Image 1 (cartoon, one colour):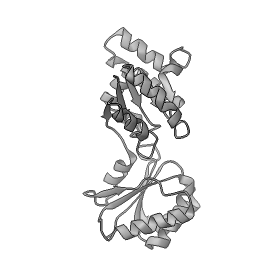
Image 2 (image 1 turned 120 degrees about the horizontal axis):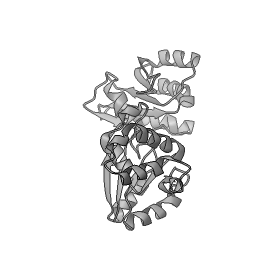
Image 3 (image 1 turned 135 degrees about the horizontal axis):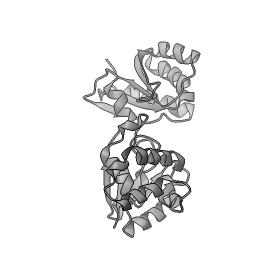
Image 4 (image 1 turned 180 degrees about the vertical axis):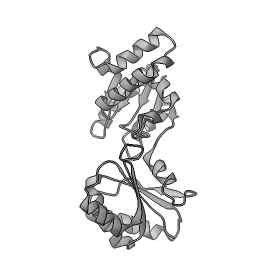
Amino acid sequence: MGILYIVATPIGNLDDITIRAVRILLTVDAIVCEDTRKTGLLLKIIRDKYAEMCSDNDMYNRLMHYTHAQTKNYHQKLISYYEQNEMQRIPGIMNALKNGLSIALVSDGGTPTISDPGFKLVREAIKEGIRVESIPGPTSAISALVSSGLPTDKFLFLGYPPRKAGHRKTFFENIKHSQKYIKATRILFEAPHKLVKTLEEMREVFGDMEIVIGRELTKVHEEIRRETISSALEHFTKKEPRGEIVILFSEK
């Protein structure tokens, strides 16, 4: 049996990749990823910056194959895996693992399976007795939490709000109701083009409470705003939000 590695990669600043993650990505037989182009770019950077970690020519040659689209092995080594093709990919990946190949699962950035595809593959691997190893590293939810100034002793990660307006309102009402029983900082993800609408709906349910918004964490244009929902709406209505968004709030 092979090993399935869940490898966290940088959410922005590429220097945040761990030494262990680099070593795994250099030596696995295949990498399962959301976007082969983005992962290929990351691997090229690894080749250029961390080639000195390669202890022998064979390992260096393996790395070269991972990071050059022109080589025959490139498309065999990088396997696209995203929400729309997840169920079709799992049987082939499982077959490779059962035949002794080692495989790394990565996302476009951060820790795989956190509001990203992958948990179904992990579940299937566990079911079949295949070893699963987590290679920890960055995740925007925790990065936002520790710099938010909100309580960190207890937190509740809620992923993305539902897409439909009616379901979204019920979602926020359930969160408000749960605050009576669980005192914890709430953490949400949201797409930039949906941020204004989401904030408007949050204000309708929670009132004009204090929130924290983390945007483009670890990147050049990182922004952490600590303000009321109305102030955030005023800002993002005038300036269209871009990049990945994390919303945090905590009852007083």
